Image 1: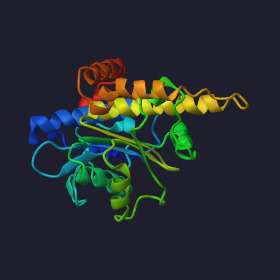
Image 2: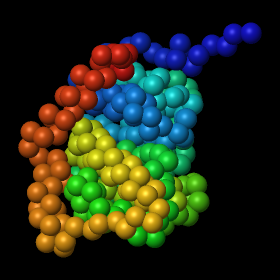
Image 3: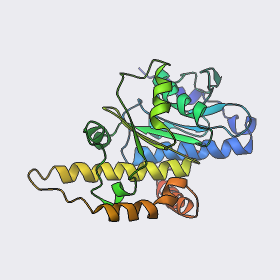
Length: 264
């Protein structure tokens, strides 16, 4: 017995009915989903990336609840307002409410951040469950020194009141480790948020691998070296300069060797 995919009902005229600026963000966000699938950062249908829609309205784009990351396209992203009203849902699937709670909190409180990416990877959750969190034991992790916030686990994010505490814990940072839950990065663009997420995921991979050495004692760089790398990594924090574009363009070339459907 065959079933009809929700993808078959997606309107083909989304491109025509949104602004060129919104379409550009849609394509980049869809690419971020496909890249996450390529890198195996997914947790089936249960995590979410979002991006603010350019313009005066407080709208953001997020995945339809039920689609896998490698099924996300520019056209099937759902547009929602800050109060949770679905502005445009091409699939009819709605959105993950926990995703709405987390992403609306940040989009509502931090207009400087245009994209918010959240994962439930094995190593990300493993680090989130460690009392000392992300350790300064690799070049990757030291690049995040002094700019990682932590938010305590409160259960599945279905309580709107949690938004206040999440935003308070994030403060003025753009990298958040959700205790016993996963990782979250935000940025001044989709490209910036993704660059931060890729670096954070890699830092967690390295930490878990290093700790698997059992009785081997970890080496922590001197404080002056950590401070030096913090200074060197300032452009990663701000998202300014050519580094973000160079990084993103290489990712898109990698993705498009096997997948161009995200642009549909």
